[in-house]
Image (cartoon, rainbow, N blue to C red; front, side, top):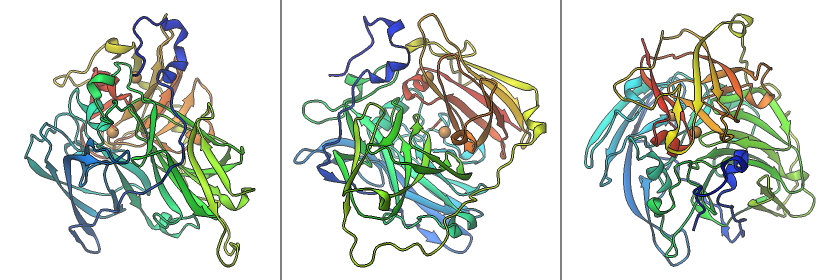
Length: 465
Ligand code: C2O
Ligand code: CU
Ligand code: CU
């Protein structure tokens, strides 16, 4: 059973809050699998259409037992949808669940109407189609449900899928890009299962974010990756309800982060660890030819084994370096004019448990908290208000836009936060300035991406016109 906060001393919890339910190391028993690429219903040079169905089913996460799960176009999790910049996209949404749901496109710059926020409910049996043109550059995005008060449960039960955007740049850069061959989605989620291996959200739910003792990657428990010794790309998505991960390798080797939430960084950032808060993405390139011996393990900050990697002896010729590695990935700029802009919107994230709020208020679907003009850049100040109980990290997310971080506590952001972001995780007391521009019109949500905080009303709305 998971530990809950009742009776615990809040002050001692502070940032170690995430260790409520300790994560078990992967035993490396099961080979990692990758979601299928979703086949379009129709495709031509500039348009593509898909059907996405939210459904319930059973899935054999543990050998010999069936876990009741939710999934998109399958029993658990979802396929990868792959679209190109410039394309007109139509998606038929179908709700085959026995409960209301919505289909939200996390990180996608779409009109508010197509965004699948809590106001876009599909009842059981209902269907609807959405249309949009892909305007933004290559990025690793994702989709998940967003119904009022039920997001935490539905994601926990398995509703989450990835959405890749490709563009001319991503298709020509010299980086690994063969899906499932050297370019791998890594969806990290922690769950707690009941004794009969069920995902019983009501039993394990924590108002401050549900954590689990069991790690799944792409829905696989005790995962391992067996692979040739070569250069690989991992597209990491933290699809957990609240747990953040700080990942490194057990041999402490360097690797390169090439992308954050909204696409490529300007140049690869050489590092030994990456941090991913709930809903964040990080793409990294790992050169497995540099590993001594035939195994290396991706571990969490406390050395919990996340993904043991077994290196097969390369058949035939060892990898030869033929072409130069990409050194320039993107050309993002942040003008002095924007850096020096006055803050026009202030967001204060505060409270814990059921008391979580933004600027002292809880979500009200009938209230518009802010307005902003389409295509106008404003600087927002986001503050995680430290309170007497210490507080906790809040990953702050905005729909319908990719923003740029201008400052963290008054200082230039580090390299890993220099790219496009749709979520920024702030520690208690931290403050960030972000430059926000909405390329489309409509009403958009902004909220904490700890799903139970979102469900508890740590969310607001902005109207863009
Ligand atoms: Cu991942 Cu409101 O979204
Ligand atoms: Cu979102
Ligand atoms: Cu929060």
